[in-house]
Image (cartoon, rainbow, N blue to C red):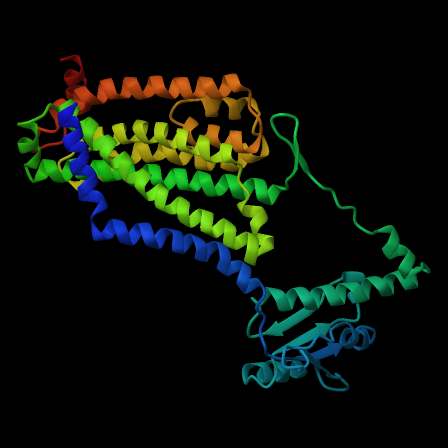
Length: 420
């Protein structure tokens, strides 16, 4: 046990006191805060530019109401839209269209809105501009024209527009989640999906990151022959155990730092951006289960990564041989959308109990619904048994593989190691 502790401390110190660890640990929460807060802040920013739009209205019924419906002003009190009606007259339409396109090209106007005479029947208009990716502008124009055309249709039908608007007023549905204990919490799809997605992605990336870190460490020590020095004072099992636990503690150190940033983000979101706080509302049990499944998932996949590092001669071989492990982590991400939609289906239950998928999928199910306690316990027990079996198998591969150089061992050779 003393030798495992020495190896553990060595792994921890070599990782934690690196500049790369400090940089990644500090930058990751800042990037997460930026990705969480900046999009919300940018939503409140709008272009302070007046849009100059020419309008060819062959229906003779939309232009006047369009200028009335879109009378918004910018912060500098200037109008957001300046519409100018263009009459076709005796000019060929193609020539007029070419002239307008030239004005757009020379930036004398920002766009041309063409409203055909059949707009009430076809419901189609055309907008020409150098920038057709402005979703906000497109949305405002489309909604204003849709409202005008719909009102014209209603009037022509002899109905009262106000009565029709009253009759078609949408119905809002509030979604309330029943949690354990019979408590009711108002939750929506966005909150449910966001809270699940963010934790699932953290699990996915950290399991790959810390597992690959162990794999690279084994390969580096093997290629530099440092492994022979280490084995002179410890057994292969002690070396493997020390590496896995040491890197696990590195992960917990990062999580502890990130948790502090996360608490700060939640407090900041609640006080400064109330609209954001609803997406950062996590129950304490979410964090408890997150830690449980991270620990179990980490031990399972880090053990597999250690085996890959032991049988590889260089980083390239290790990357190739680790693809099956990465696929085991990708499958839960692929099924994430299905799990959100049907967390209690037979397939979801099977995937959440299957050991290699359960760290991510069972955690997602716990966050989305209330799976029976027997399913959670079964998932954890199967995962623990799989970890113990993996350690027993991998220890045999590790014992021989770390001292094998030259060529990559074949599957029959690895099976011989297991038998011996």
